[in-house]
Length: 557
Image 1 (cartoon, one colour):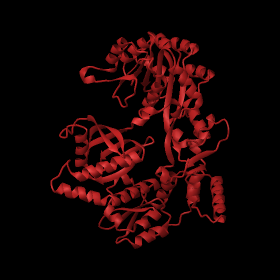
Image 2 (image 1 turned 90 degrees about the vertical axis):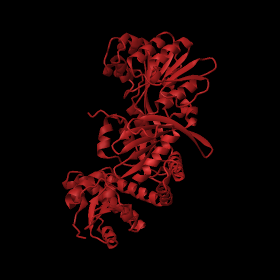
Image 3 (image 1 turned 45 degrees about the vertical axis):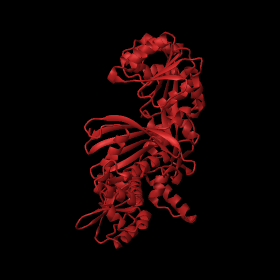
Image 4 (image 1 turned 60 degrees about the vertical axis):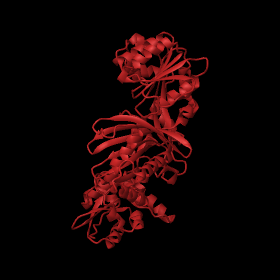
């Protein structure tokens, strides 16, 4: 292997990624580590100090060394080739042989300057190496996928043999495989399982703490019987592959019953199947278990105990709005109150509450259900989602005639709910008279307590929140361990903002004042923005700056 001498620090200064001062600071830290008997590469220290990201370093090296970047997810990974190399060797050095042609074996590395490791791998290679650069996390994911495939080899072979004998969705090994996938997803605390066909294979991913994580990757021939099995269980039409379908099924694992809501959708390479895992224990959540700050919790509790009016819970899909509404209903329900909900679909059954599932095929929409509900003499009404003018107008009428209406709305922040109502056709004075408050929320991942450590954020991240930092704070993150699946995060918590519509804000709404003016007055009355709530969570060591910036929009000054 031809070695090209590169001084990483000088290269990064030359490319404008770090300054001379930052390089000297990193070299000092490296020297200190060395004196303690702990050798760390300069690149690792630069990332640790927040002076550069791994991607910036690798892009500079790619340019200097002439090794191209590779997107491993777009490649047809040759797992047989990988198994011809010692697994401990490629795992130790993060070097991935991913394909070959007549002349070369293609390898991906996250450290192109580690020539000793490259030469070691070359000794086991029957052909010359062609070096590519890839991010560490991408290499680790492919390695995990490879190890999983090795452990499942026996089951996969069993599936293939049964298919060769002419079995289809009735193959018993497919049942085993589906159970294995679902049990793994439940063990990982997943909310959804995604079965996605790709060009060369198919992937099984799970959403854990709001972020998708790959569980398995299988050969394409197993995909069709697996999808057919899921469709059979869900009472869906197996022969229909061109239209989206919805269904559900129930399974018991470890003595606990789980509901799976299934959605199929046609894509370029086959049907994408998503299984939503519904855990009945979620409906037992109390308000104080949502992770809302004590200050916002008290403000929200006052809103849901209003005698009448509309209370909106807003946020994007998957931000926990429905869970919050269920917790609110658990808080206010009782034998002395008639509570009716309209949902699409009804995910969880709640005692003492009448729940109506919408059915557009027979004309039972949110608006028509809501009109009939008003004749049922309810005290509290919960609307799964206000998505059209008719539903909004009926909700306002219900609020103005003495009912408390709890509903969800898709907006990015609390104040925007007012604008959205007006855009949907509601008159300003009607919004002013009916709206009592808005909770806007997001879910952020919590730092894993088993591998929590102090760290320094990158310059770009700090620059974004500089105007919002009133004091110097310590930043923490999870290093990554077995407990958190090497993500550094374990569990989720809410960040929120609660807008209480008092007489002053109600007057501003009726005068058609803009969002900025309403926000300014709301702050005078104690409104705390979601970003400020997030920074408080960082300050308390609950989550990371990276996580807050992932879910909250920061105004770039």
